[in-house]
Length: 201
Ligand code: ITT
Image 1 (tube, rainbow, N blue to C red):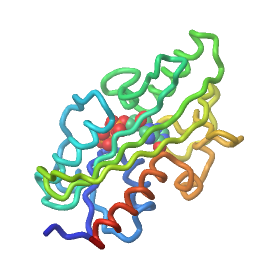
Image 2 (tube, rainbow, N blue to C red; image 1 turned 135 degrees about the vertical axis):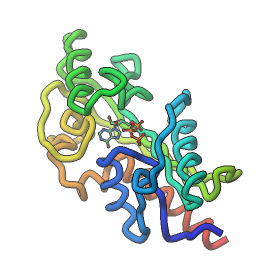
Image 3 (tube, helix red, strand yellow; image 1 turned 60 degrees about the vertical axis):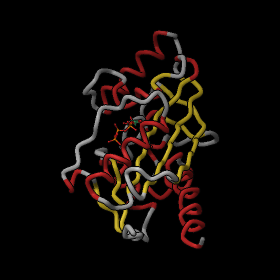
Image 4 (cartoon, rainbow, N blue to C red; image 1 turned 90 degrees about the horizontal axis):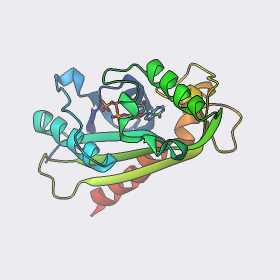
């Protein structure tokens, strides 16, 4: 039986890793890179497929509970892009800043300075790489993206994203504030309940 108090987070994104350490205080969080696990190309057509693949790859090497996170930003006015391509929107090896500037340009091409948008996070937790019953949790955060960028907190598109009803971008919020309302924060709360339910069965 895998150690239930340690979770290998199958991400190479330091922004995600920090958020998981905050969101899962009762677990020992290990990054896949510290175990020398390298990610595989993301070939799935859904956030779920990619998240499951990440978790399986991490588990195959670590043998520990492994958590995949596939997430992204969806802008309906841009035909739901960047979507699955969020990390690689500007080009294959794009930095967060390049992706933000590319998004700004794509909005400006449509003469928009803001547009409705939402973040999606799909988490998959596996106990073995062939786990027939992975735990799955999804979180959404509705809001809008603006071409003006404010704040330096968080990562990715945070300085451009304004949660519904907020005058602050995610880039202006503290980590605790973002965790309470974010797509990742919501998905983790659901996942925790599933883990607790599973443990008591
Ligand atoms: P891993 O695959 O190693 O986890 P990644 O960054 O490539 O890292 P994804 O394939 O899931 O991860 O791409 C998610 C992208 O979506 C991420 O790089 C950001 O650009 C964006 N994103 C996801 N969650 C975000 C958040 O909370 N705040 C800002 N941008 C976010």
